[in-house]
Amino acid sequence: MKKIFRVAVDGPSGAGKSTIAKAVADKLGIDYIDTGAMYRSVGYKMMRKGISVEDEELLRKMLDETDIDFYENNIILDGEIINDKIRTSEISKMASLCSAVPAVREKLVELQRGMGEKKSVIMDGRDIGTNVFKDAEYKFFLTASPEERADRRYKELKEKGESISYDEVLKNIKQRDHNDSTRKLNPLRKADDALEVDTTGLSIEDVIDNVLKEIK
Ligand code: DC
Image (cartoon, rainbow, N blue to C red; front, side, top):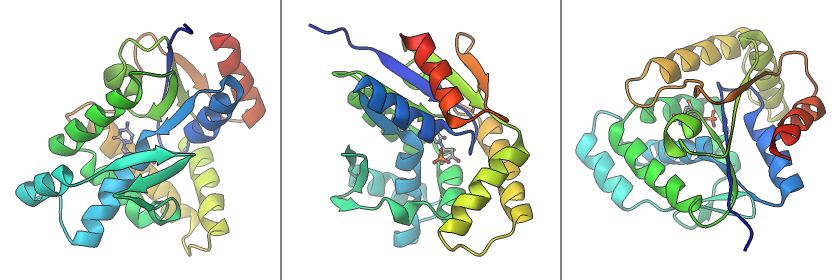
């Protein structure tokens, strides 16, 4: 039987994790799991239900009744495909806030471990190499300057028709970096055994090649 392996891709917002992880998954014929989309889904559901991060009891109840899964690169929340609905700057903020809540992390980490138990996966996020799969066979930490990451995110949001300025996007990125790396529970951090790839000024193809070279 083929040996199962896990690839962890961590790093701050806009470092290119999902683009790289998706392409590597295609090349290797393994599943790609976007854990940020899972935090976004929880943020989206909280917003729809009007539940705030302080409503711990309501939030726990909501989580008990929440089902998140991936099917053919679609993210499914309680049976509904929500791909585009979770890619707004409003949901980005909500996802960052809810990702600091222990009950949310417990639930999502459990789901993530279950997803990577029986098959090879490439998973991107903030705490994959340091927490979800500490024993992952391959670990990468992608970085890029805040300005380059803001530039990439700004272009994405503009394409989607969101009216937001570059300065606002840069401010949001810095705020999220701060939230993600200073929260008490599993903050964004490079695992000691992860390979750091600074993608500033590199093409997507260059980064994919770097990652594939390590795995093969
Ligand atoms: O990668 P992203 O921008 O879609 O992630 C959305 C938020 O979710 C981000 O602010 C941090 C949080 N997150 C996390 O805490 N742990 C993960 N493994 C993935 C994302």
